Length: 290
Ligand SMILES: [Fe+2]
Image 1 (cartoon, rainbow, N blue to C red):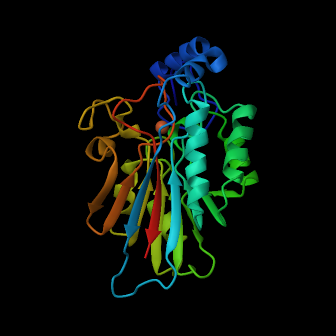
Image 2 (spheres, rainbow, N blue to C red):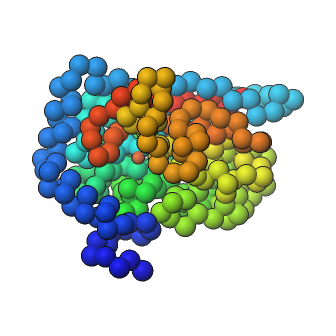
């Protein structure tokens, strides 16, 4: 039970007095979304990198039809994410024409308003993918996440909370699980894996790389995550300065091998706190699973 006057409207844990106070100040300071509009006038502001990765699950059993997955995380609709960045990210997702679109959570920053929920619905709906899956992030769980869950459902995306989906043919040997946010939600790795049933291939999505301990040793081949923003403000190298989460510090972005698990950490699309990124270019990723 929290002992301070700031209670989030959502089910998210870890909402501290400092977080509540800073969000109250930012809601007032950023009224009218002027930081995103100001940043939208900067040259090069709409740079979003498409990362292409080819993942070979089992060289002895090549897939007759490769499975194409597009992944985007941390959209952060709100006062610090320019429209042009979101336009570019969604154009890249549509261009990829994936079999499956996966969204890694943190759809908003500060508040899930009906207008932001409609924007999320329309953007996700426009991506041509047969299967769309989503998990919630910490910023979603701290606000009216029901609005976002409804918007995603209207866009054809299934929100996975410690649950899984079996893909349709010709990829019906694959299940994709979604783990609830490890920091602010109620993650249950055993339940999410059990929901995969007898699928020969298990892939996963979780908002943060802190989901890795819940997936280790459970036969999950690939885990897609975000949350870190690659530090958002980083030094050349790139060397992130501040990265949230204990495992985010270890894996701030990119592709990593952790025992039998391949981990991907996206730098995300949008921004929080300030509309600025340095040496942490927004990204979306396209995986060809063979
Ligand atoms: Fe985020």
